Image 1 (cartoon, rainbow, N blue to C red):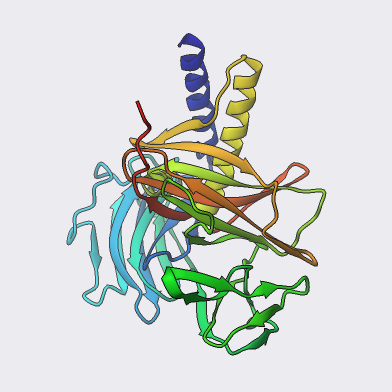
Image 2 (image 1 turned 135 degrees about the horizontal axis):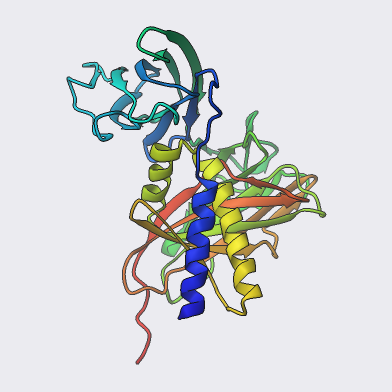
Length: 374
């Protein structure tokens, strides 16, 4: 127990060290928009006011998109115990397209983070204009804009023959040209080494997924094709820059990833993708410490703001499909718990000392597993 406790304490110190924001005195204030992709019709993003000193802010955030709406806001380092009061500290417009917030800083040396939640099913643009007070008499005005994207997949009916290629900017993974047959089962078209699908039957559907900007993604969640006595799901992974000299795998997170990541967005301004790299590094360092200490561990526990997650590493050993420069692989997750359990996953690639993670961290709930016999 003492060794385990010591490991957890070291891990807590390690992860805290990764999370500190430090600005040199006199650093000119600036703003940064931190975005996450849209998933299940929702997203979170943040505006970071970096620099030193920052005495107060007057900020306006606009969203432009078909159905994008601002639904919530919180602040880090506002001089109101980080609790914003609607109508006093901030106002969201009636159409939920704009936010206006004003506040003084609790600590003028650590900048500001304003995090927002939004409902949206399509991509939209975020525009920010901010007056930053550096003293009681001086201010600077900064502006920025960026576009946030939606997790995109397209289902299209296909006819018999060959599906030669997907639409521009999309890919069709192995197992994504199919149709349901009798008995609730499915039949699938074969994917050739050139990426085309053979033996395509009338009535089949081809599911396309967006090619990731960084060439790596966890693209979808499906029921496992293999029979299992316990509830399971399969996470699919894709890279279009495969190299045999790289190491690939999937990080599996059990627990409240949404609460965990939202805490880091609101308190440190980390996007999902940047946080995931930090989580992976924390996992790897903790496992190395455990091995050095003679401790056998299957996972690493991390906590943030009362949200606990267990992090597992599943190296890629099998291939779902492989073509020129493209690798598709999957991870099947079986839920052995006696209660419904939340699982999240993201692909990673290690090239030398560089770690790249999927910008999409996909989450699903798997039903309670079959109880073990006593």
